[in-house]
Length: 438
Image (tube, rainbow, N blue to C red):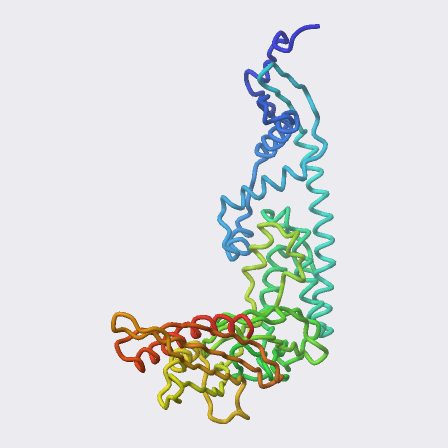
């Protein structure tokens, strides 16, 4: 038994072989404490090395059309092709391995003729599948089943993904076409004919409340030369592009081409908010399994979109306040203004009609004498506040403050300072709690 270091280093480790009949892949991995699986590491390195030997030729017809429009750089495309090639390698042969105490080496090779023959078989198979899906897309379009047509168009591109750099010159309906280009440009034309319209805009809503308009939504249509057609079962995705809210973020159109907009709560106090609807291609292409290349091509397509403007107003508040200072009712409010100002800054409005109010706020604040020291009066204020949701009649919040101190040379002024301080403390606490509750 000889130690690893005693085995003579082979020539292929010393100098990379050159063979015009084979693609060669040589990998090496260090034997370190954090690389227990060094054999697999070396194998991956060798296959990556072999794939890099395979010449990447990007058809000018392809790059100037599909790839260029998708925004992918040529270097990115080459790297993606090498990665795809490595993943699809087959029929490579293990020629030799060598190792010593520090390194493990592995040597693979693949006959060039075998690789080219296998690749041509794969391209022919992928093209046949793609053509079949392309025909189905055209037929579905003709049958006015537009969601199915879009699905087939997208599916027709998928088998060709590993061969995106190839021109894929194919005979179709009595003429020669570049298959990648033909599918992509027809898909572009199809997408340009899809339209999304709001059923109604603008809408009205209130901060913290759901959208009440049950007719709100979007209609998807296919615009043809002879007529416009309603598109059923089309997946749409919704998002706030201005403002914020909680809503059902996606749905499919019904038999009348309608997808309803369901917003369970408007969160932002912005006066004008905008919701956008667009076709959700990710549902149709299984985005979780899509590659970088395919995703970029799909994202380059012109997506139809529609927008709904929502005019948002704050909740209306009816406020009932009682303030007394040292047993006497105050005609001028001291606790109330701070609270009102804070609510107004968040978009709340105030009404004198309790029947028209969304919220009913009751505030009671009273002061009592404290101590007299060093010619200064201390007066203490106690307060209770309650907030009722007028739509449900439910008391949604209440709290109290006690012994809030005001100090002044004048007893009445000390009481008013205590009430003023109550207003500030309530403004900070009540507003934050209401934001959580509503």
